[in-house]
Length: 59
Image 1 (cartoon, rainbow, N blue to C red):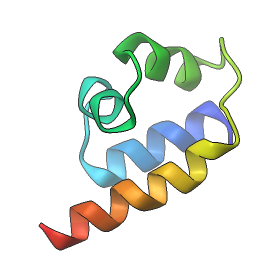
Image 2 (image 1 turned 90 degrees about the vertical axis):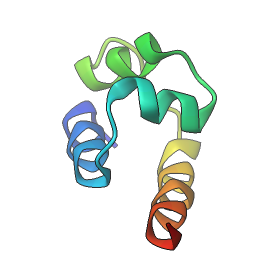
Image 3 (image 1 turned 180 degrees about the horizontal axis):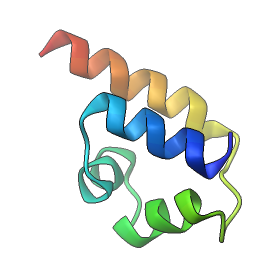
């Protein structure tokens, strides 16, 4: 996953960087760095986003 795809997914889910970071248990600046491509996005993130998405649908 690339930073632009992460940003698109986050926007689709309706989260700010800070909200997504809180859901994932990371710092908000980590999400920002992932989106800018400054830090590699870990492989687990796609799975974690699926989990976050499921939680959004339930609410």
